[in-house]
Image 1 (cartoon, rainbow, N blue to C red):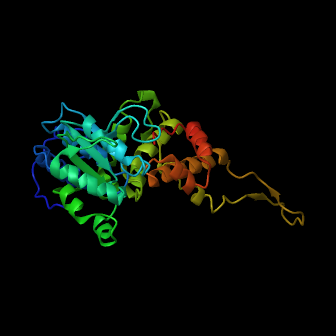
Image 2: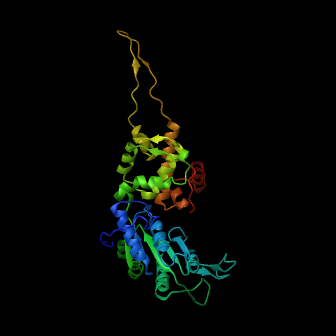
Image 3: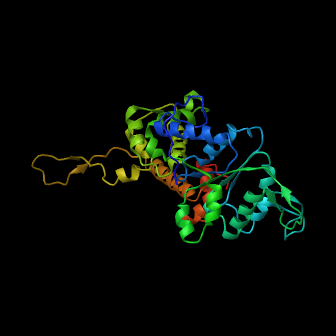
Length: 345
């Protein structure tokens, strides 16, 4: 469910954390400015990797809660038996392993904003409890008797079709309408490809000048033609990869292909091998070496790309990414260390 937004003038200083100058991103900035002033729940809809948490942080930063905590939790990354304790906290001895009282995320975010990412993955019984908190503003710690009043603004996000989830009985319709008082669409990167040069500069802003990869017009053109299934997160990975493989160098279209993980497809048609043939000779031709190919680098580029894609598909959950790659979790962690991939889930 998208919100129709009329075109408005947006200052370049508005939402500086939202990078881009496209019409699409300016409309998003305008919506952020409008909703930030209130405390009603906001539901962000958008594909994985499109920057929904960045939008949530911008809403918080522009609100009158900016000096209070911003607390984020990925509902799909928390084990189902721990999600209630994670949100509401627990009392000492309330379950095995509860050796001390624990403050939940609602209490941590009191006065500020609680960002519930991948809300569509929340188990059904927890949806009932979350709805009650939204309606009453009261929580109860696991194993506790009394209630605790909290003042929290909820910003939630999903890449799922919650309408379909409601039809299938996986998501409560009443919770959907309570969370989505203001639904906001976060665009995918392909729909605002003209922002790619600015995003590249943003991702390299903290790198030393000598370590920054430079993209010539042919490379930028190739990147802007890409479909970006991993969205902004995928572009960030490509830029980081470029800085490692081509520090201080100018990158062209072919290097862009390699950074996108397309090099193996390019090699499907091998370089022809030249021959030296003596006139009127029946002897077999002597081969001349073809152009050299750095096969090790290409294979590592492909492996890194597949690891990044699996992590993106699994929303950063390492165990799920390992399953997608048919690897042991420890093996995937070792490969992530090898390539300098930093994920926290």
